Length: 203
Image (cartoon, rainbow, N blue to C red; front, top):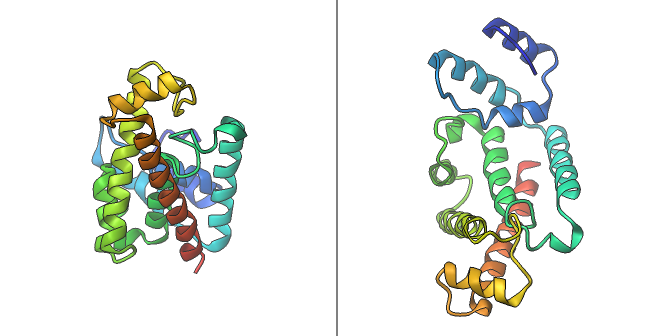
């Protein structure tokens, strides 16, 4: 998508903008310029209702990206794109915002914790689910950052016992098994909530 004017963006929005582009625009942030620019972008991102058919289109795109970028043996170890990883959590939040943009005040903040709390304030998830997602986001983000700082394989919990032990210690766990228990519990819950969320959004 390449447009030079607000009018051009509005025309593209009306005539041929695809759902994946709208999804991507939901991540847009104003760095410099007129606040009017962000308003136009946010309108394009959230104006089209997220019907079951459009939801299916977006989820298919997500699956395609993951299958291309994550090897099958790493699907439970990739902290970003794997099952129950950051991507599942972020998509759950963003898709819910697209489905209920007014109730969630979609686009009003870039802070993921605040966006999760926004789902709770809109009564789209309950108070327990809010805290579960916030804690999961904190854990997954810390693990991803520690993997990077330790120079381990990108976005992947290591299988090598020594490397796994280093990661566990860096995250404040006494043993690798303690870390794995916490991590696997977190990813399992996030994956279940993501799949349940998709079912709710089809309604």
